[in-house]
Image 1 (cartoon, helix red, strand yellow):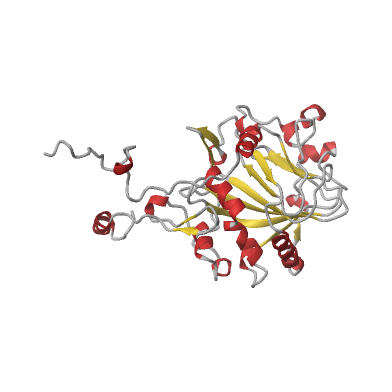
Image 2: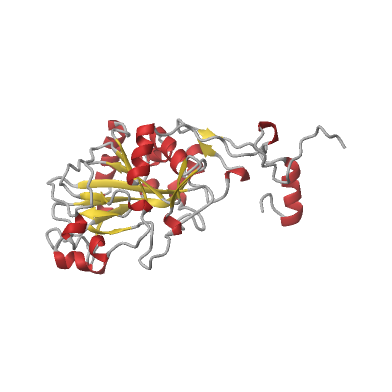
Length: 341
């Protein structure tokens, strides 16, 4: 036996560079500044001002305008202001106008699908997601545009680090470990219209992503004036990118501005996990037809980057994985009848 030969476990997970697996996960690019990391870790959300170019915003708004027949108002049992919120009037708006939802934009005919697909690998988004979700991030929920007209009701606060029963909300968890932030479900928003201070729209309780207690119902419905003072509504301009962990208690305030609110939300998950199931059995064919290699990588089903997953690089480009060693693939085919177990 050669005593100078390195001792390597069956998975090869030793720290020395020479002993790393040939198919280890690519190193995450530098994504956020120190200021941005501090703000996200402190508050549970972050606004990247002017992240999306004016051309992207203009094309997205034009696409929405061309599909207004697909904008659906929530009414009846679909109202979002919550029982206590309606009783207190804190979330009711004008009492009759609901929230409006629009989906399906990834599958719209070109050129209307393009600005929404570009978000998946946009450099500002890719860098942030690689740091906050991890290399190989994937789209978890179909994109959704939330719209509000003047008087539209708000949405009771939801999400959070702890369930109503007082148990950890693991599927929404936020963690900081060994110098890294990780989120099980992260929301990225492209703002298409102005939401000035006091206009309404997105709101959150800063720091709630690290709470250890369940949310008081009166806070969730903004039915307690003292508790409601903890709620913040950040000002957003067209092209701003709002990022927040679903572990942060968040919701929507009634809309008071004359212009229509338009916010397109995407929810992303780590490579190996899923919350939604829109990818089952496959994403709709129209949603992925003609996508770039990097965009298709974001649409992939959950599996670990070590299993030959193409990732998205710093500038939104596809990063090919280091392939698994052929002898391992060959063995898996013998055991399982397929390349991957």
